[in-house]
Length: 134
Image 1 (cartoon, helix red, strand yellow):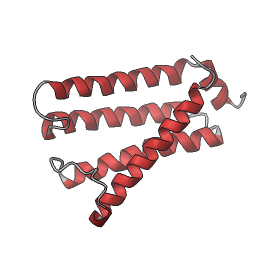
Image 2 (spheres, one colour):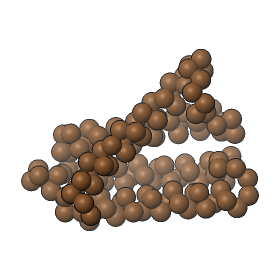
Image 3 (cartoon, one colour):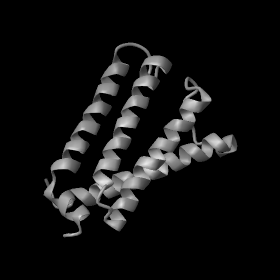
């Protein structure tokens, strides 16, 4: 992979923080009205959704900045919680619509988490970054 991949991950996680932050702001103050809320989700599920997105991005960004050695493992743990929430949202609350296509979207999300997790565990750039050698 490219030597720029860790920095691309930083940009993606910054976007995740922005998305989670906007969603949480809209959840807490509906007058913000960005259109990010899913009316099929119960209030607690929607709140957890935004908190987990915000937390996942923030943990990676802070860990990256501080070179916290447990960043890859904490991020992967948060991917697992996001995957669990995705299952609940998809199966119980019909995220991504009705029909079979919603399961394809869920599978694509799971594949993304697996690929990102494999990268975080196997990349020499990531190992160097979080061991203090980069």
